[in-house]
Length: 122
Image 1 (cartoon, rainbow, N blue to C red):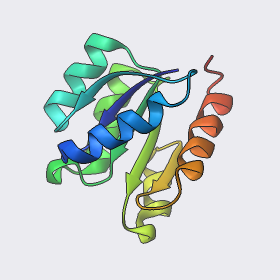
Image 2 (tube, one colour):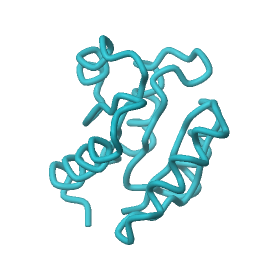
Image 3 (cartoon, rainbow, N blue to C red):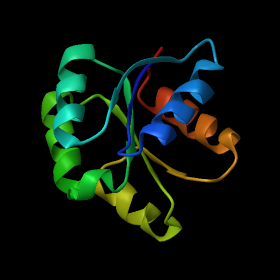
Image 4 (tube, rainbow, N blue to C red):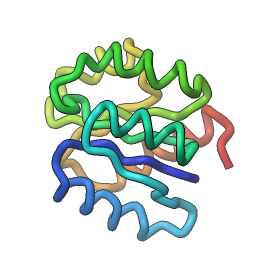
């Protein structure tokens, strides 16, 4: 599965990339630090999944999800955030899954598998 990671924190992006690269079925094709960069990365690299920081540089997440869906309506989307109380909002805004930052990586891999199965991604 081709993945783009979007988080304003470069260290967190690198950590996520290393974690995801530990699974042979996952390929991180790009990373983004802000909204504009993310939209360019999606258009250029055509990922199957975006793992998106829920507070990416202060942009309204709902508007960002709408912008992402305009580029590719079939793109899988996981919102990751350190605030558990936004999970329901993230899903209502159009995310396919939610990952709570700081929890064990098995929860992230479960979310990725859920998106893969629900969107029929190889």
